[in-house]
Length: 520
Image (cartoon, rainbow, N blue to C red; front, side, top):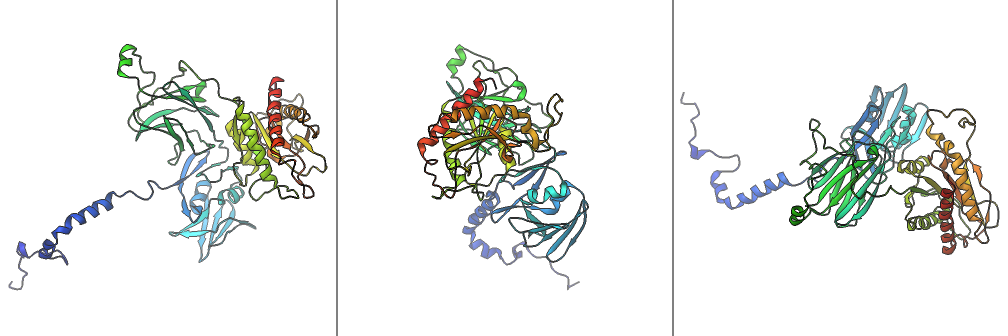
């Protein structure tokens, strides 16, 4: 047993490669090492959360991770298909992934923008990639390829992280802020009824909007007042909510709903002074908000139908302005180099300013900036906002050298809805909804033509019908206005004249007033 290892004395124990004696001589470095370890442990991640892409399906919301690769957003191809149907046999070769899906054969080519579906080939703006062993497709796959696979409608607003597939029709909302003597009143008007639950978290107020899918017109709203800083829409966890940030702590928040859940009124006010509370005590009209989001088991705070003592007037009607063309779709052009997309944007800016000056309207723009917009996106901007008018501005070659303004309404094709004494259909297809508004649109067009006739030196043609695709899906009185002749053989001097542009804006506003006076 002499060969048995002897137990070491405590003084002989060593850490690997760090003898205790040497480590003791460097004890001054120990606090620094500990500090670095603690800092590494608690150092915040570069992103507080990973981004999710939300698929709103008839079965409910589903989330997939989205990756930003280069300047594009990418999603895992197989996970997309598993969400939307049954995936069959999958064959992966060196540079090709073949997927059976719903009776079709899909081929993804590595580092190639082409996607083959059966005998058809579709080209994406970015290439298909491999990331951590997953085949990734750019988000445009959802709008370019997916509809041909599922044969379902797809609604997607470029730049967002949500998509609506099939019969899912999202609601939306508009926002207004009005001053109060000791605070502000936030008015949120929804396009459909919602059930709001309130909570507070990290010094912010959170409004949970139930399970109703939402498509906000703007991802966030920034306010310039002493009480509210920002309101942001967030559904990254699949739960639609509004997150409201006050400018400082200590403010009171009193939310109530009105009109059966289509309007939310929230007063943000300074708390009364102790002296005021003693002199004129009043019970709280809204329960205190809990510290954190409500759990599914906890009862939601009660939101009353009672309107505050000084309720605001009804929200102002919305006018949707559509600047035709945009991005790579430049439209017509003049001899002196004026592009239609830029010219109509100038008219829209003047018209917007003139409408807001009346204090009778709010304005929604279907296109902001020089970007490509589909017909569906333009109509969606109007329909989600609940617009009462839709004005699409153009300036094409009308074929006449004289100064001319023409107003057009939508002209249905051979698949028009039945007219006469027939009862209206219970379901109006999205692509035919303007047909239910044609009478109103024609009255609006006539009011505009009559106002344009007063412009000096301008010929205002009688209103006419035309197959304007931009108008087809708008659920409001809608017209297309051709502002004049913009052609390669003629300068655009008269159309770019600021005084003339202002006159046109004034006449349009007066035409809306005349239309409303006529009883719609």
